[in-house]
Image (tube, rainbow, N blue to C red; front, side):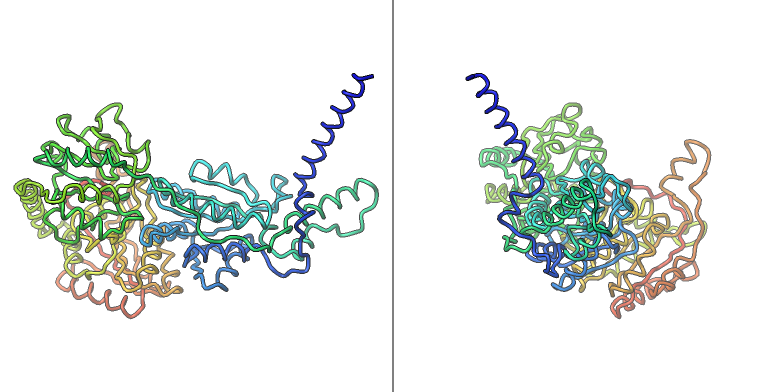
Length: 622
């Protein structure tokens, strides 16, 4: 008898657990204490907008779609500017630029399915460039996912490899906590993109969703009534507790920092060095350290610096410490190398350019990037998993009174001057046809205003520009980064001009890369963002052709045409200029006219027909 009672109690306990779990999964327990307000006109888009506003978001970049309309409408009502582009990738690139220049999270919102798949390259670029970015995506209704709904795919599987954090919101009450968590994740540790998916039934008002859920006729039969109860319960659960007050403020951001012991160890290494060098990467521009303080720290150390990525311009246009040429030779001579946010990937020959005699201090927020290829070609003397900007500040404070031996940066600067003199002489040479691209770039360098932001989007022409154009200060250079993505120009320039409306924004395009975002001249016109685009038009994918022809004997797929890109800009409401050899004498005048058009609020495109030169310096992502 005891055995029977025991078995009965076990079965009862299991059944009770099953019932409780089912009640929890169906939201019945939550609904007991939190009701759905079926008469409320509010919608989930309002919750999204409130969180973004509380986090200081000023812009949401988008290409509109019905799945996300409530978010866009709610953001506009709260004063968040909605900027619609002509391609979803541009929206993400623009959000990326805002993140880099503002120190906050950039936000893009796109519709479900193809809207999201169109962003994949731009999101991967943000991941590799370590940009804090929130991608908001629409999705099919919660009950219809996997059932063949319009534009329904497994979006989560697509973005999990690309994003630090991925979440699919299932009820309106989840919107606020999920978004707060996502925004904190984007900025914590190594910054990067995050993705939040919003099924359409979590964004529209109750009465609209109810029309889609409710049966068209009264249910008949037991099965039909059970299904109807399930649907009604599902609807109530989506909206249960939806409008209850919730904390909107930002969650704490976690940033790894060097230990005091590590800093002291590095202080001792630097103090003994005779020929130290700093290689500064994009991570050195990240919050919480203001770039002006990082610049001051570098200047107080007096150590020669090579600047890459977003760190270009960190020391201003002309600095005795900024070395732009002969990096490989300098690294062979250096007795101490500080990799401050710089990675030993292809840009540093996987670490092979570092001398085995040199002491190496490596600082990076990301452990895998910190130790990249250290198992093969190089070994760090000190490896610091921490923020590069704050590390440099503490290093400078620990070395008060220290100054790098003056003859070392002076000798490197002499090499700089000799190389730049040779490049200037090449700019004076006449090309077989059209204009010498080096001369064009030297002219731009001379007339570019002191507050200019330079956006680099291209291969051969842009590679030359990276050695000739000098960013005027910190956070005044934007390039794709390690992924080397073409097509960033339109989006980066859009984000930059919105962040810094008082600055001249120059896009340096190759004629190949221009094709990806020339349609954004429509966006520049509609949103009054008068950028200046300089197109080096040599009718060729020259960076590829330069190697393909001698190696394989064919120029197949490399040829383009001397297309009238200036006419395309005119058609989108901008101002286009065609510049050929006959315009060489008045080149400065034409460039200044483009600047004046920009000041008057009109986006301009300079279609410059250029010839071939033998100038070749390599990748811009150094």
